[in-house]
Length: 229
Image (cartoon, rainbow, N blue to C red; front, side, top):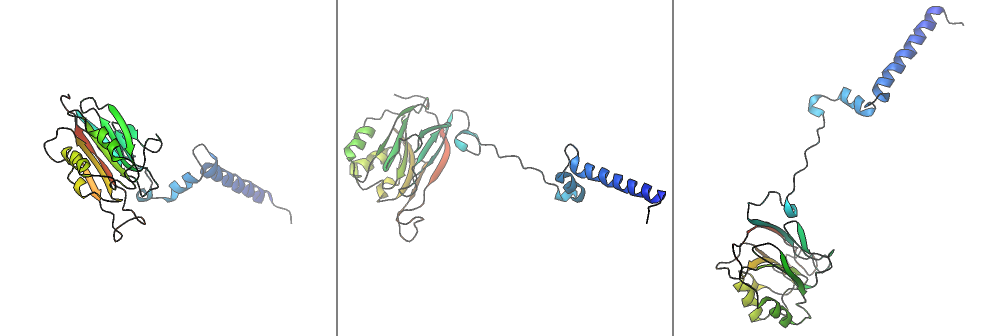
């Protein structure tokens, strides 16, 4: 049955309106499905991207005060993931830098300038403890000492080693044992125990990994020394 003129006009108008609506919803610049979502979403359903939290030096959530050094350190995880020591946004020790190892990972830092003096790893399972003693005996006044354990920090440790770390401000070194996790920041010439120290014992009842406790993370702001000798 042939279409009458009015039906043809109505059909053309319907097709045209359909094309116009589709182009507005799907085809125009900035259109597409987001525009459809906007039509059906109320104000309470609109999605606003949350601003990313700003990170400061070494990933700290807050900036350090003036004349303070920002640091963040992580002990090794079991015997798989090596430790990290970051100071003032500079990575002093890490697996990526290829300067960490089993035992004690120690970075010596000038307490006035914040510059790295030396960083070394000492094997406390099969190494020679005398190498560690030669490293920390002659420290100058005001030298900062960053220590992060990896795997086993204590098997080769003797009484002199423990006393030297205690003199640097450690309160936990006397109890440090096989496969404990330990992070510590001390200094030559401190009068009190350091506030920057964490220690977790190796215990089969509380270990996070099979044979090892959890890794430790510590961050903070260390006052610069006014002088160093």
